Length: 179
Length: 167
Image 1: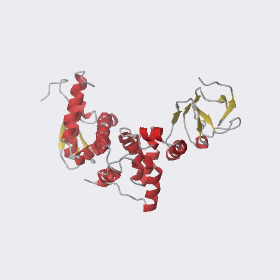
Image 2: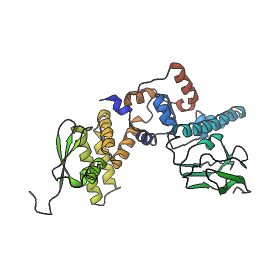
Image 3: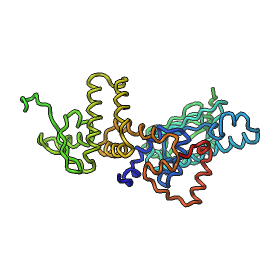
Image 4: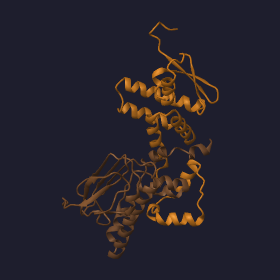
């Protein structure tokens, strides 16, 4: 068996294999090699669970408040870092980005700044997120001339698409309530 | 051997190790690479031999077996039924990891989507709950992290290594 050929499998095949593995095992592939670390970062399916950060579900229930908070902070960091890495790793290939964040207590996820520098060619769909800063003048550098559409689904707090301009979109503040 | 217009067309495929395969047209057309060969060479003679310089005879025989069965399943309206699952399970049962890897390389080269889907899932099943070392050996991956880098990645994904059996 020529090992070089199998370890050079096309990224989409490796991502297909990853899609059949558990969250934990996908995360473990980061450790295989530098190439796999990059492949894992560009794996387009995200699946996070706060229980991942505990030994067990019971461990989560029994954790002290302090430990619990620390774990949750780490968990949110994990999401931020994962998104950021994904956008960097997938920079050239991403055409559509659809981010849907669902939380139990209906809090909105604060989208990291990196989103503004992603190079998307067609579509951005956001759901259940808010931006780090009030985006009255933030311009979406990510939307290039050939962009077809931007969807900002409710409930996105505070933002919606106002108008198209040549290379970017201005976002304005609106009052949209979260249901 | 053929009555005019009724002949079942046969496609000739030649492997890297020089073996000639005669494959029924519907089966050969499952291979995207063969299909586009004939799409691009519309006036290719019927006895044209399609060279497959990246595939050897053993995996090709396995792939033909799989695709032939699936073409028949589709023709019989059995797609997605238990019959298919049973065939797939039997098909993969006797395959070693090495054979599986040869199959996925060949299916990738020939560009057969349905079979790739099936093979990637099979590989994932064989890697389930296996250690990092096992997965490295499976794919022949060379660990090119420095010990410090490896430690840093391991620390970052600490949660992913809790409760893993080292086998």
